[in-house]
Amino acid sequence: GGLRILVNEAHYDVWSVAGKTFSNVQVEVDATRVGGPTDNDFGVVCRYQDSENFYIFIVSSDGYYGIAKLKDNQHSLIGMDQLQYSSLIATEQPVYRIRADCTGQDLRLYVDGNLLMEARDSDFSAGDVGVLAGSYATPGVDILFDNFVVKQP
Image 1 (cartoon, rainbow, N blue to C red):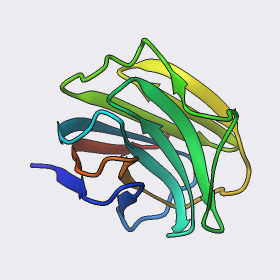
Image 2 (tube, rainbow, N blue to C red; image 1 turned 60 degrees about the horizontal axis):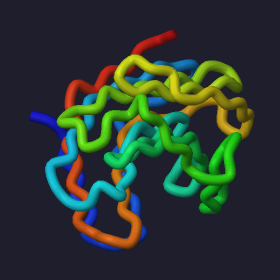
Image 3 (spheres, rainbow, N blue to C red; image 1 turned 180 degrees about the vertical axis):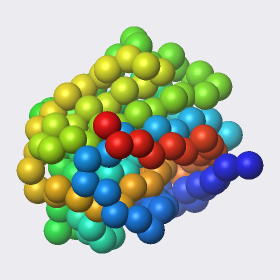
């Protein structure tokens, strides 16, 4: 049981959304790296407008994290120049519990109950939710998502 995303192309992201619309929302999911490189990214999508406009809350199996947005098909990190490393993200852990809060302009990323980052952005106020997995230089990122929960904060 779960949704498995396999990314077999380098420097590529794949996502899936629920087909619903939310404004203020808390999204949680368990993510497991089934295979592929630890230099990867995976996480939660929030306020998805279309394939060119949404927020992304990401972590990696090698301990990095960030909040990003895709706006008019242009990718940018919010509140940082590059993904940050945190010792709170256990590297190569079997399962990561990822939580994204999208409340008003406030965006928060949690992993395993630890708040990693807070940012503010006003580009998107409502939209769909989902999950995302991506690769960098090495393809073959294989992530299993399970226990997807959407709550009103």
